Image 1 (cartoon, rainbow, N blue to C red):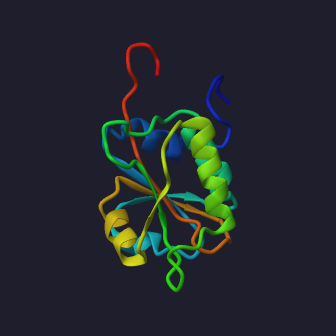
Image 2 (image 1 turned 135 degrees about the horizontal axis):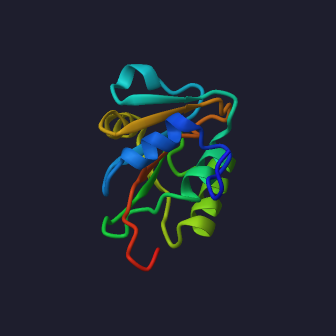
Length: 145
């Protein structure tokens, strides 16, 4: 254990976050997501849910304030305007820990395409459908923000 580090950030995930630079992206993927075949490095987080992983990551990682959007969710295939309960929760976590960012919907295959270019995919044990979220890393300023 370390002081000041969220306890759900194991060594592999902590390493991933530390090696990412400004503008790099990380995906928190649900249990149905094809994490191992898309290409980026996969960090296993079996047994952990998307909400707790999002909270652990955003406790330490800033989102990109220079990009038009820095958080994306996978849109529901048959009903892209529907906001699944878990995505509502994701938006609340982003609001609380990252500030005024909208978790924007991305069509399923557009999400896969973007995820394939991410620095890392965190393969969670999340069982909710459409519980995938992609985050663009921002910068820490000299004032710590």
